[in-house]
Length: 80
Image (cartoon, rainbow, N blue to C red; front, side, top):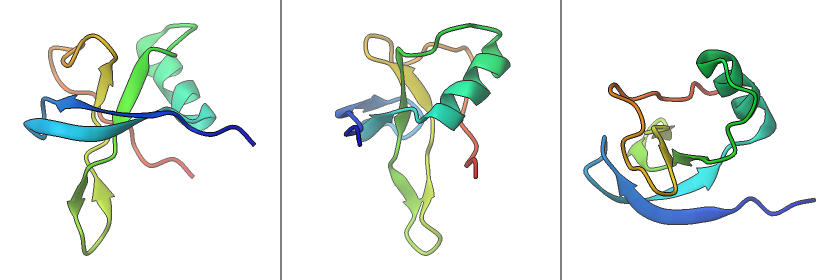
C-alpha cells in the first residue's frame, strides 16, 4: 500500500499554513472531469478541520507552487 504524501503550506481560504495531501484516485477522477483535463497530479487538498464536531475539512485545492490556482476556490466534495 502506497503512503499518501502530505505537505504543510499556505491555504488561501483558511488564511494560514495548513496540512495538505495529494488527491486519492476518486478525487483525481472527479477533478479531471470538473476541469476537463487528463492529468491533475499537481493538485493538493487542504485537510484543515473547520468543525471539530463534524470533522468537516476545508478541502480547498492548490498546487505545490500556486496557492490560488483558480479565481474562485474549488473545493473537492467528500466522495464515497
